[in-house]
Image 1: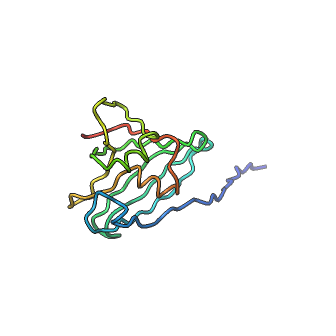
Image 2: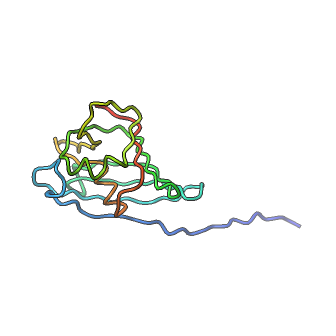
Image 3: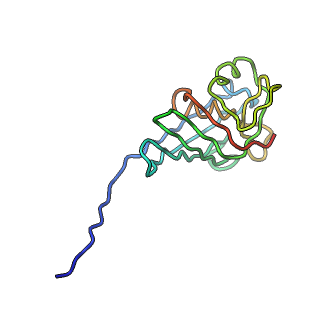
Length: 149
């Protein structure tokens, strides 16, 4: 008698987050609204997700891809892509600074937050703002590993 291995397929609903960050909500742009979308891809480890997506001023051009990890149990985002740091307003800094952890932190980095610069522009988006919009809230911890500042 032949033995057949059974393929067990499991269909998993993926969460998709998409939206627009209006220009007046993003202090790193002059007058462009920022479009974003992100997929929450479940990982083999329970409560872990890989978030992949894109953001930009146009859905066809002037956009950039991003990827980060999320641990649901600890409510921790780990952003392991290169990013830049910029000086921001006190309101933005106060909103996110308690959640942010840098790999290497200098003591003189007041009002500095990580951001992504969009291609062919000098504008971008604060990464914590983008993460907040994707999740609909500010995660407990946001770890930033690689910087280019």
